[in-house]
Image 1 (cartoon, rainbow, N blue to C red):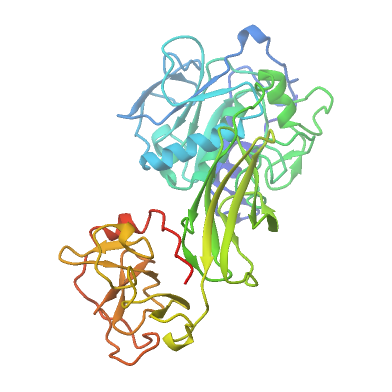
Image 2 (cartoon, rainbow, N blue to C red):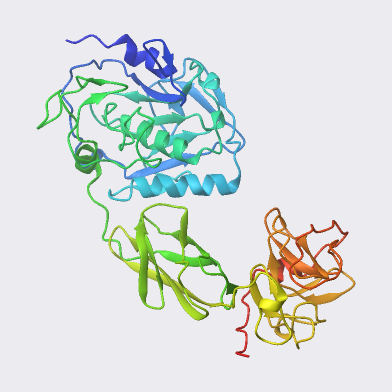
Length: 464
């Protein structure tokens, strides 16, 4: 029998190797009574396996008692006495992102991830809450699970999410690793796999369908002996597949929403295209096309931000973002935008009544629906943006508060930390013509309609 390495049980949980501390708090496992290093991995029979993982955020706190692992009665071999785990301290949005990430990680397998305790039946409980100290674990431990060279029915694993409640990638990685310890997976020396300790590799880990050495910060012999690879290597994907089987065919396409620019916007060449893309399992890639031609290389991970070519000419352009999921289902979203004439001052604009705003020509105050004209609704404005300061309503154009790029007679009034609108009389640069570059004054304007107006579609500007 091979003795359990002291490194595996303590030093590596603290993230220390050779006296060097590693930045990421690490997860570990604890052998259950009667198990030992060198045991042969035993795949469970189908009738003993539960396909449900309950992610428990411990709303109101979780109380655990020591004993044989049983998620249905809150008994855990990890705790030595009655233990209270505090509720997950992150936001609801953080929690939903974390649940979605774990679902995506387990998507290839016949596993159901829930965050409401099942009313009956068997299930694995992944506690995702509290701190390491609350479970009697040392500082620097991000998670822990009972472990044996096989499947532990109704196991309870721990991810101490309150150690870093907003680090969704780390928590997703830890939940995936700790749950997998409960069905016989050792640490793997592969920075792409959730079973790794290595902080390199992709932020989101996925179970690799390839055999590789076990280990933490260096390769070592596996603590279990697996069919086909012995104790030299493990294949995390194959072990989980042998436990749960594969998932049902994925027929649900991803969801794609272009968040910027909005439909009908006036933009400059080289504009950024931002999209929100989600899928019930995983997003494989996304690409941008403009006027029917693919632009650049596909993206394979968020953030989904593309750049249009700086060579695009003036006029209308059709912008499409297409996304694929892991099963090759596709979805698209599209907007139409207009690149106006480039300018640095009003006199650069060839259409009478146009003014130079943020580097392109737009209808000015002398034009019906132009910048600074009064309005009642968005439809009254050439920009389709009617803003209200509580007293006046004017047609506006978007601007960057740090760029001072509104025409004379207008100033860029911030509507958020990074966005604003050109507002009549808010400049401090005085008269003249051309773009206001002398700095915008701070004025007591709260755009009561502006925030909503800036988020809705702009109507296309008529050709003039």
